[in-house]
Image (tube, rainbow over all chains, first blue to last red; front, side, top):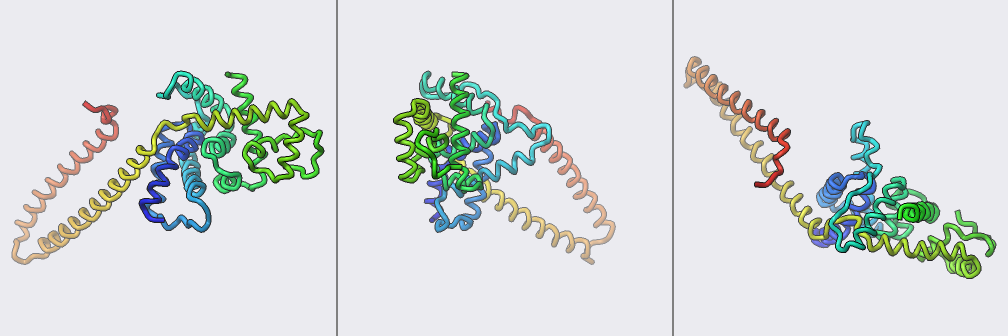
Length: 163
Length: 150
């Protein structure tokens, strides 16, 4: 893959990676930094990605996720739980109805565990296959369906309770 | 975990998610399909899971666009190139300065008194420069208005 192709693909993955980082770090600026740092890492060593081993998306998301884990570890102990998302405030969405729906979803997601938020974003927001999700989260492929189902049921409950 | 010998009357649980995602075998798909025809509870969950998936797929969980990420990649390249440029420049400058200082200190053509005077002048200038530089760096780090555009 040449440098321009890689840049285009990474740019397409930016939003999904940012959504994943945001669910892990709980702060949009930290999430942006994490994605940008991952871009630098990947673009400085493009040969680290081997197209024969699988698509770019799960590989890049694993880089972003590992970087987020490093960032959480580096945080001071008093801020160690900062990755538990606080209720997000209103954002500049397109329509009022869409904005309300997004806010409700973000608030409900914020009440789930980090693991549950990650798996939902990877599947339902980024549309990754179960095998790719297992690759990103470094878990056994056979556990993805059950984890995802539990996460979705928890989110469904949150949406019903707070909708 | 999924039990392959599940009875059709048992609730299908996590298989509903696999069904919505198209991740089941043909046998599992048939099982879920047949079960949901006769189970209102699982059929209801299946509908809710489909709605949930659609809602999340259409949501704006990240507000930044593709162009913003492309720009940030270019910014990073420019930043890295600039940093490398500065490093090379400073290394070259230090090498030239070092050679000049060694040449000056070991030169027989300049008297020791004159050497001391020149060292005092340049040493003083260097001390003043680093003092101002340090102050500026501290101010820059702690200035809460540094990002405000006028």
